[in-house]
Length: 352
Length: 262
Ligand SMILES: Nc1ncnc2c1ncn2[C@@H]1O[C@H](COP(=O)(O)OP(=O)(O)O)[C@@H](O)[C@H]1O
Ligand SMILES: [Mg+2]
Image: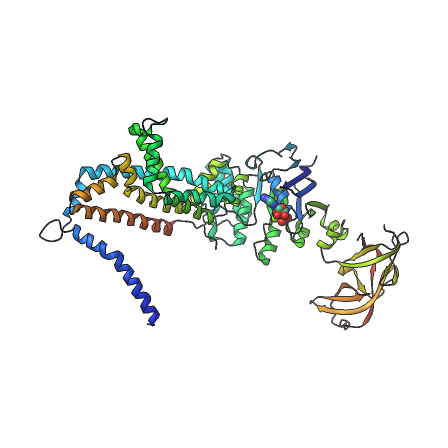
């Protein structure tokens, strides 16, 4: 059985169901992200795991023990909040030692653990400071140390980086991951930032309107999105509406022109479906044989530095594609007729 | 100096005179007990009066108990209202303002009617009962000041997150209130406490009608029977109030940590 086992979790606030049949198994030591737009229920699931909200139905087990009805202060779970939530009246060292003191540990043991934690977060000299004397990034490190000090079974982080500026956000997220790996602690990390989720997680749960749309490794989520929502939310995506000609042989019509997808899919003739493709898998030109080819003309060219993003108009719709900048090959000018192509396997067929 | 500035200075100066002149006059008068020039004779007489010592001591003890009771009632109430029933805040605020709206004389007559010797709970019949009654009464009088200052203090901290952080670290409610919430609103609690102190020290209506020997009735009695001493007493009373206010400032200035976000 998985270390953290969430089964058929539901939560309603009054008449609105905010979390719907949420199921998840997390292995010991795994780092799992909840990714989704604001309001999709990420925090609510996390708070049910932490014990701050009571599920309407469903069960949560940690290491085989049912905790669904257990109050938050008896769950042995570490929590890191977006707003840090350090105790303003306590020093950094007292903040970190808080959980140990509650657990009734001796002074010497607490001091030892606090020093260990301060070293872990790389702030060994700041034990005597008060929270208001620290930068945001330092405060969040202290909050992390405070959550970890009592050796919780699970670490929960609710958008811990959202209040920080871009640079700190990136260095701290790598540090969180390093610490999590060093300690081998099971962690759930909530974020609405797909780059954050993809870059540091073992697995990502993409949430949408209270439902876990897809659970998978970052690689799976990005390359094999299970739903249209996942495909659109994670990464940049080109979507083209086409009409089905023959689903079994993979023929569709795009703006009156037949296109061969050469892969069977589900759909009735005449039905409107969506083709999805990542900008990085589309190329200018026909390429080798065995590729899906679309014709159009250049609509816009955005020079981004090492990458050039080109928008191509195809039968009244648009496809963006990325090419690397090559000093000896200037990008085509707007209005030039072009063909673009992509490998069959990179084309995703989404039900409309 | 522009004309507008001149007028503002004039307004401030007039206001200042309005408040200061009577004080200066009173102070001047209190120093003239001995014919041959200024002296602190009136103060000496007042401070040496055993009645003064007794009533003042009684009122100080009563004020301290009122503060403790007020904190014990108000801090958890304001905290849970903010945490769990934010919708009730206007209602609770209105309730705590009632003692300002209802005259003390009405309140105390209510008490006497309900708790008189022929009632179910004859508090006024015994020394203990009377003192309890006046303690509870004063706690009520302190509600507007206590609740507002505590609530203001709670506003400067993120009550919800701090509570949850403490809970996830294993704390129960008692520890959260005593170790996390109270220290962070302590400065606000103190300012409420000093106001309460000033009110209880000078309170007359409750004390007179419940017939307890506190400082308020003593001051009134003095005022009716002596010449110089009442002025000296008034100056002393003012000094106490000002000392309280200065203490609030000091405590605020020198508290080690800050709950204000930067
Ligand atoms: N205590 C609550 N009472 C009523 N509705 C709530 C409460 N908490 C959250 N919600 C609603 O539940 C939905 C999901 O919220 P939340 O879990 O915070 O989303 P996320 O963290 O993904 O942004 C939102 O529509 C929010 O308005
Ligand atoms: Mg959230």
